[in-house]
Length: 553
Image (spheres, rainbow, N blue to C red):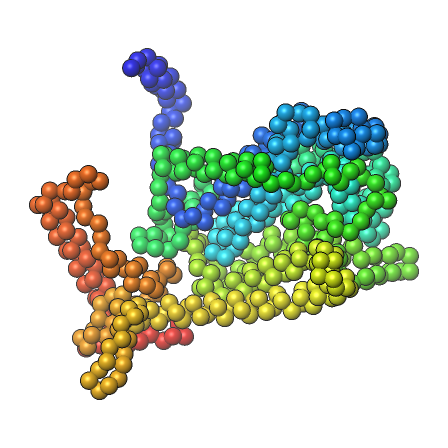
């Protein structure tokens, strides 16, 4: 094996280090530690989906013409030959049928966009329920909220580009209609955006600039800022053995984390590729070009925008006439609700800080059960989103189940009022029940499933204590450490542990005995330390334990 390449590489590295002193800084960075909990991979899904979006988007840009010039289709798709359409729709058809791999790239671009938005939502939910947005990470929460908002509008701009019947319907109903509903300035804004009346001949080229150049650049800058903050502020972690507010327990970035991240990117790409090859999405050739006279029911946007469409369907037709000169129509309330939701989402860390008076630095995460109010608010928001999203398909529900469209509308209105508070109550009580379950195990031990009959005829269930016991054999209550509490015997390792040694041969007998003795001594020391601590905190001087006040938990 030749050593010329390593020698040359080493010489280049030596030259760079002698000039710029890179080795010390690089060594510190590649030794950075990341936690290994699976939920931290949710943000990586969003990152990898965005990378796939950029790659596939570059390919689509080479063949798409964002022009609204009128043409007559004469391509390979026979059902649309001779039909008048825009140049944008024609190039979309050509991209789907005449460019090798074009349909696959179109579909992977669309699926990646859905995956990007969905993974941001799930990632934000993980951050919300675990309290990872608390000081000093409020800025990262704001960045994540902005990424979600930009992803929604970026997706809307993207699926409006083909100028098919579905995208044109959404453009007229959502963008044009809501813009016109804004009091006083709505008409002027609409005229400036569309260059005249709807649809005009400028909106597709303008959306193209936003979708291809401006918004992706902002998203890329926000992702870079997000990663830089995560890198600089260190990663949060769940409470556990050896984990404190001042350290991070996990694996180094090289080689374990880098290899795992590379494999996860490959898996994300593989899943999106399979979805793109097997699951059809947005078949624009079945819909036809945009024609206002052909708009019908059954038109729904992508899932991340469905809640806004659902709100527009169930919101009452309230109109205001201030000063007798202006009209505030119903679509304006939808825009107002969207703005309110986005503002509350962005500033939530400061809202919670206002009520909790918590201004401390937090690097350890919280379990959702330990913060029942926040968990209840999260489920309340999820119930609101679910009802609004389902109501986006109320016309399909009415058709399939043969019920009145007005009945489905009122179902949505009632559900939007009743279900969020109900979801809050259920989640809150569920969290309290989980807290009591953890406290019971810490006080009495784990249920073994063994029932014993006493000489008096009484039946009792045997519990396995998690810690030391007092002189009467009763378990000394343990303090809750905000970490998962084992609830089953198999989580305590009651089945034993594997022997020491490698896959092929065990360790020598004397070495194995020495390791076992050292492990036993460590366990005894840990148990004695725990006993002393519990007696100091809960003891009453004679070795008996006092149960803690449950109101403190």
